Image (tube, rainbow, N blue to C red):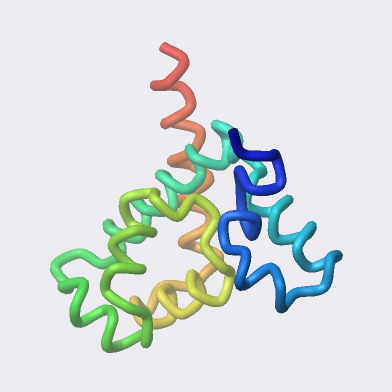
Length: 121
């Protein structure tokens, strides 16, 4: 049976753990083991919908070339598989789509409210 230290995060990668200070190992383990809330997942789905709408007919490949992100990263963000993407990634996407970041966030917030109402119903 595995110990709690080897169940999640760095504990699964003992070679990596040897090269990190104990505080860093604890920080990585804590970050990996924290579960996302339903609200975070809903916001991620809403952001993905807003990005797909803003992309319109542009292909993921074209968007990736414009913003410098990998196509798979964009696909994951669009389908909500990355519910809390890095701010600079979202900013790069907004810039490549020629959409103000604030507008993108406002649409995602509005969509979050409507997704939450649908999930409750």
